[in-house]
Every structure is written in C-alpha cells, then in structure tokens.
Length: 266
Image (cartoon, rainbow, N blue to C red; front, side, top):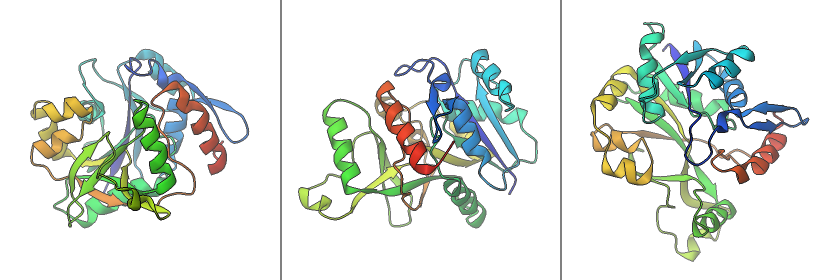
C-alpha cells in the first residue's frame, strides 16, 4: 500500500494564532518551529512514499521549504485538516493508495502509531478510515479533569463498540468515571490521538458531506464520518513512557518541551 503523509497547517488558529511557527526546544536545547518538529516526526515513519505540509499560508510554506521540506499550497476554503487533505489529493502521485493526516501539532506521535493505521487498512479491505487511541494513565486523567474544570481543552477521548469502531469522540472526558474507576494505574479512558489514515474514497465522501451539528459543537472533524455512516476504526496503541501533548494553548509549550527531552528528541 503506497502511503503519503500530509500535515495540514494553518496560521490563523483561533486558540493559538501562528502556532505552526512557534519555537520549541528539544532535548539539547535547540529550538525548532513546531511545523519542523511535526515534519521530522512524520519522516521517522518507515515505508512512507511522500511527506508534505499542506497549507494556505506562504509564511508556513516558506518555513517548510527553508528546512528542506515539501509544502503543497491549498485554498483558504478548507474548514479543517481533513478537507485540506482532500483538496491536496490531486497534487499527489496517482498511485498513492492511503493518505495519513498527521496533525501539525502532533510532534510527539510515535512512528509506530502511523504504521499501525496503515497496517490496519491493508489487513482490512472494509476499513476506510482508521485512527489510534491509547489507554490513559489514571494520573493523566486526573490532570485532564483539572484542565476541564478550568475550562481548558486537554485532549479528546473516544468510546468504541466491540469491533473497535468509534461510537463517539468528545473533547469532554468519556465515559463517565466514578471515583473507583481511577483506582489503578490505567484508566478506562481511551485518549484519541489525532492522526488519521484514509482511503481516497473516504475523503471523497467526506467533502461531499455537509458539516454536521455535532462536528461544529465539539470542534472535531472526524464526527462527520460517523454522521455520514462511515465507520472509523480505532486502533489501540501502546501508551508511551512520555506524555503525549498537543500544542493547543501557549501554556502547553513547557510540558511539550519536557516531553521532547524525556523522549530524547532533538
């Protein structure tokens, strides 16, 4: 299965404008912009035919080309990363079978997470969309509960059916957790990792489907697949030793730099 990784990036983020160009220090203190760190994370995935940043902003494109990466320009009309990936399809090699949407702020994503998604699509011809999730440690869930109580978005959780297909995604912690549910090291919460693998047909259906109320309320693009009747296969992946954090708010910079140091990423 020939696979391309696309990294959607936009400058005008409502929560953190300009975040693709925010500098982040690695294990030895070298600072690189977020988009470069995400690009380097994507390049660490084995067996990928193409890696491109897809953006509508020349500042981001110029930064990517400046560190030797590939940038594809898309229009300003894409409402989310999935639409931007769909728009970029015509610029990819015609024999690309699978497209991975590697979030521009997912710089800490282990390469094996992406490999697991591609392997899942290859093993199951009926799977059109796949995304990873991992069990969350109880202490991390408590941190997310604190962030939620303070009105901050700390992560996205997912619940699945017995076949591993998503029932629902939410920026709220789901399912409901009685106190005893956090008594062990690991919790029942599956933290959704914002990486997706699609077949071309799934992207075509996605852009032909209007945005849905749930998608707009939650701010989660993947809910459009569920409303359109396209199952999203959730692939369980192993929880890494370091904390996976996305850059959603300025206060996330320091914890992400700590995680880069713990992971030994320079």
